[in-house]
Amino acid sequence: MADPSPLAPTVLLSQSEINRINAELARQIAPLIDDDTVAAVLLTGGLWFGSDLTRALYREGRNVKFDAVWMSSYGDDKQSRGKVTVRAPFQRSMEGKTVLLIDDVLDTGLSLVEAIRITKEAGAARVLTCVFARKPCEHERMTPDFVGWEAPARFLVGYGLDHQGGMRGLPDICALD
Image 1 (cartoon, rainbow, N blue to C red):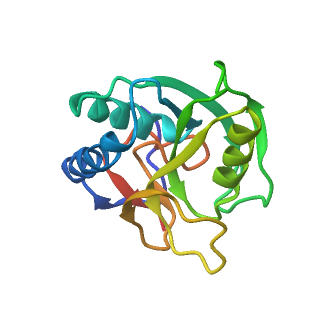
Image 2: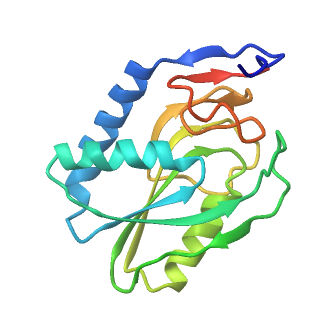
């Protein structure tokens, strides 16, 4: 058995609350998109949210295409390094499409701003943005079209959010500070 983390996570948002937020986001987004929309998740942290959101959209009658762009601005640090590294681009054409960019948390906004730029350069006709959580930021770089939860200014783990690659699989969103 692995040694437990020296810091015990504090639950901030339960799995049932996460599910409720995803359902509400899908109700808001579904009328604005169609089945040709590409739901593009920012990897790696956004994968959990992207999976749940696209299933919630399906329950709202939208069978979107799925893609991902693999980006990183944190590495194993607790703060952004101040630059975004693109590790793998989109796999399908974005030309003329509506693209829904999906990310786990908006903190500095660097990754999402870069993803918007890449998506527009790829020829998307329209780009919508959705983040599960938005943390307070003194200098907000952009405002997402959809925000599920206004998160506190704490170090978050679980539901795709990690601490040095671990704790992503926690079903709740927790603070680790």
